[in-house]
Image (cartoon, rainbow, N blue to C red; front, side, top):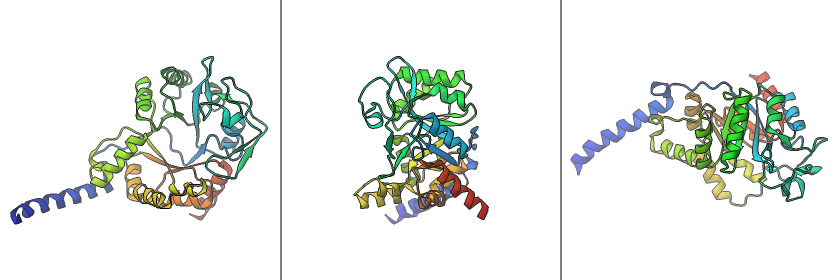
Length: 302
């Protein structure tokens, strides 16, 4: 037993020290990713706290407040057009569970900010193609929620048509959907799915992360404290999630490899500060003007 320990302890110690060194110096094993965009200010659903979500008015407002990226979800209409919409059906957004496209409600609650509402003059659903036409150079994150090959193909075709492959991000929580997105267009950068994110955590805690190549360009993840404002009752679960996932050394390692870390949905100054303090490279918010004000104030203090 003693002889076994004499053998195993140096091996484990050597592995731990090597892993720690490579965690802090990932450039030794990995070439830094070079994406065509670097986003600090990301507008969730176009900034759904200041205008009706995913409308052209919301996107324009976000751009006017200096956003670096628009985040949105896409679905396919009955007549085959790619429409920007978060939900699979229209009940929450319009009050009608129909397949045609009525107007958005006059007033909508901000999903991750209970008790807060947005309104605006523009209540029309917008086509993805119209977003590409209006903002040809602006990075866009497109989340695909359904494993619909026709939808994925049409999104890919639009991205190619408007020459946006380097500045349009595939996003999905589902690994099967992401696999299909990447198969359809592997020239577009893509984000971590839930399963891939969990794998990164496992690799991080076992010390294997510095040795493993990663194809993703962006990690998008919830800031756990936002669940305080979403009515979450499981305080212990929330604290555990925060301790396990909000690891500055992990985010610093990813950033050193050129993988951007975007935390969301940060709608108050304390959340924005917490996200950047923990190592986020970018913050996603429902309030583009509030995020811009925070960044302006803190840049002036640096």
